[in-house]
Image (tube, one colour):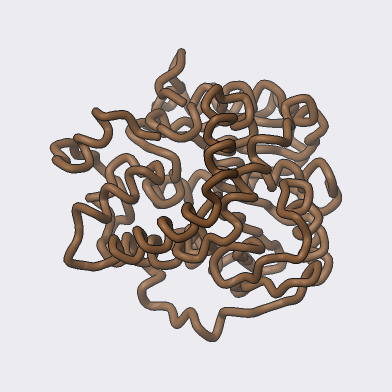
Length: 345
């Protein structure tokens, strides 16, 4: 959770940051999304998803805890020009039903295996944020034939190792109903266009670094679509009770790890740990960025993801090191990776 200095900055935003948020008018504002919404039954519950775009290659986007598929609004239109893009509401989130089975990381992984099979998705690029990154890693381990590339954006795979994880889960266990009511009520109040400061505070606690710089329409859409969070508490428990560190070396596909230096929810030091543990991984660190780089820096994120997808899946670690070295020599303006921990967990 953000500390007092973070909270003060959100209430009195004096900081600014270049190229934060989309440049120009966002494409998602001009899309009629309703015809793109689809539903499918998986494991006893209906899941909502969007599925559109051009091209044979597919990208599957997985949202994080307390979010919905609209997390990817700044990315879906961009990649739909060249790829089939799919983004879903996980069971218990957004407009997807609560499942009859117990929610867990393993369950979400099984759901995605069946979801991919039902949609005929083989060899996809899987992009996950926070809990969605955790689930994406689980999918790459459980069904490697389904995942050609993996992108982990502030993935919460080590969340159970935080000192604060256990007391937070204990508190959630005894106040599950209250948490659901409070989330829904709080988000409803903060989506009002007349409450920009309240929206900034809400998004700040969700990990955004400079939420006041985002288009108000995007702020409202993100908060509005996060109201349905029936699966929040069981998913929170699953994050804190499913260790994955020892399994990460089993991920064999090329992996891109994306993080913000000022992620107050999942420390940037985990980017280095994950990249070290996954054999074919490399990392990109964004300065002055929080927990949701794909929304905070969409232009750069879309460019980096497009470049990553354009590379041959068979490239070796030595090949990638040579590319990074060449880019550094050319001075392409990419922010250097921090030498140490630049954020608190």
